Image (spheres, rainbow, N blue to C red):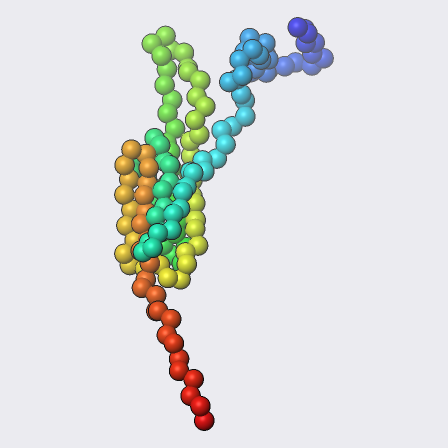
Length: 146
């Protein structure tokens, strides 16, 4: 271990950060970087009569989720609220989960019936059903001889 020498005054915060580095070096979970932005994982399946979207949103309250359609774009947005807790001795715990606002947008095919879209949220999974409009069946055109 190397002893650090300073040529100018150093703040207590800097010294505490360096002490944390020394004591926590063996633990891979130690990190000073901010948590990455929340990007919910999404599955989209096409079925004969609809598209079915599932988004993983664990730990997010239903009231903090918004699903909207505008100009042929489906947008899922919301926020996972931050938690700060202390144990009985007043010490802070280490938190690694991401918190903050998120938004995912998906361009929709023209044949989606936007008036019948429904969304359900259960056990941290948002499901959105997008029904397809009935498509015109191909029509054979008779070629006439003149």
